[in-house]
Length: 405
Image 1 (cartoon, rainbow, N blue to C red):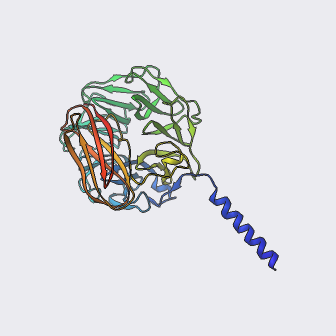
Image 2: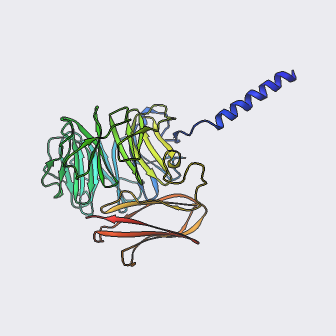
């Protein structure tokens, strides 16, 4: 009897040891309705330090890194795009564009005349661009009160991306287009892209422009603002790319078989997929010290430190306080700044110009311990190099950011 008990105890100990030494992996958050395929997460965004998910059943918000999720006032509608701007949060849905001015508690339709699903959104200081599922790209110059068709019509646009004054679009089956005049005119920028491919995602990493394509072509890189493209797919075992995200010099690709990482501008990729139950990834976003993936069965989370060198080397203890590189960078006119604090503290985050004058105070108040992400809207500032400084007690760190208009 004693020998049997000893064997059982040894087996339990072995199981515990195996579990403790298992490799790090993606972990499913507690929502939105984790595991339910009706809550397919199509898009992710950061708004007012909250993680926001657009699903097949409305918008959900988490204030605690996905530990819990709360349904917002926009329900029973498919959400295909989410973009925060200033104090507003815009959502592209199968019923047009909606806007919330209270962080998702209540929503209002921006226009009652929409007849197409809105599949993509991009916002500059003066314009809101909306790409529809099977029709035109529209623009609003009055915060969504009215909309006009741009010069890119009758196409259906799966992706929109702003870089300074450049607006890129991925029309269905028509490669890529570029407008430099707020959508009045468009020109194809498809040299090197396979014909009849669809660009589902754009991103800028290390000054290079990347395009993630759907249907078998993979990721392409341009070093001249889209004039020419080259495939960068070594190690990218599945070539249908649905999302791109950047953290420092790391480029992530979300595909229909999980997440891949490149640390050398797309020259090579490696899978970072462990843990997914069904790795069809629709969306990616970096928030604080974590990367989040919107998948067909909810939202998944993984610490960046497990798969990159962003935060610390392997085995090194994390810093008590950390300031991360803003994203996107360069930007126009909004960018997200993330930081971590170890304990409840008074936090000061300010932006300075090149001569040291404070041009913005992003936060100056007591904040709880944990990861935080805040936006800076530089719509009223000129293009140029700026510095942002985090001050928490005796801790202080400064980083550079670039505004291009």
